Length: 284
Ligand SMILES: Nc1ncnc2c1ncn2[C@@H]1O[C@H](COP(=O)(O)OP(=O)(O)O)[C@@H](O)[C@H]1O
Ligand SMILES: [Mg+2]
Image (cartoon, rainbow, N blue to C red; front, side):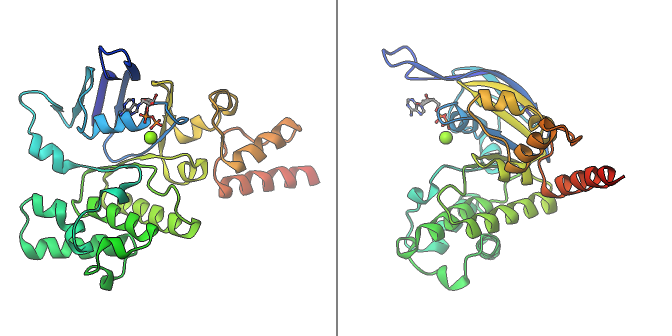
């Protein structure tokens, strides 16, 4: 369980450029869930997840993960560091080793794992993100942008974190590559029962993957609910400058025209079933 209590973060606190990036966020996230995080640029998403990952310390408030309060005296920092994996925005800029293998194995090596276990993890993580084995001995700098991104994601997956946080992991990738990586992550979530927090601007991805969604606006958490409930709030989301999935939009338009399609539809399958129902009743 991840429990945030009144969490705030201010960059350059006390100085003339002081700015509150996250303000008084309180929320409890259940272990094992796939949680989406949306909000327009500058709403505080990256700051919030960096606090959850323990990289930056809240200016005020506290974060508790599985009973341990981050940055407290009793917190087992080493254990926490290995429990949580964060894939930052544009992680390809953080590659620095001579070979892809070394880059992916950086985390597991720090964990002090035996050599053969490190090798197993590197190969399995590379496979998960769709990297061929012959790439492992290349320099990361010889790779394409998309491949570099995969290497960076594999480096986090190789640590097999219980809590996986991804900050717009597929931004800038081609659609096929995006889907491949996201489906692998969904698969991993299902198979291993890990907790996933996914920051994304893609309403389609959030609709397809998440069970719950957090919505940030100007540093505040303004919504947190089941995905189906969030996408019922089309007007509120639009007021926040956000969109809904295209299929939700279509169903909303049908409802406005008087067709009895329920609110909060966000998958193609449900939409199809509901529209078929309406058509059947029309025929009578
Ligand atoms: N390193 C930083 N120094 C100063 N201000 C920052 C820094 N990083 C982010 N901010 C500011 O904090 C606010 C929230 O940013 P961020 O958490 O990156 O939002 P998001 O990820 O939703 O785009 C923004 O106003 C941004 O300009
Ligand atoms: Mg961000």
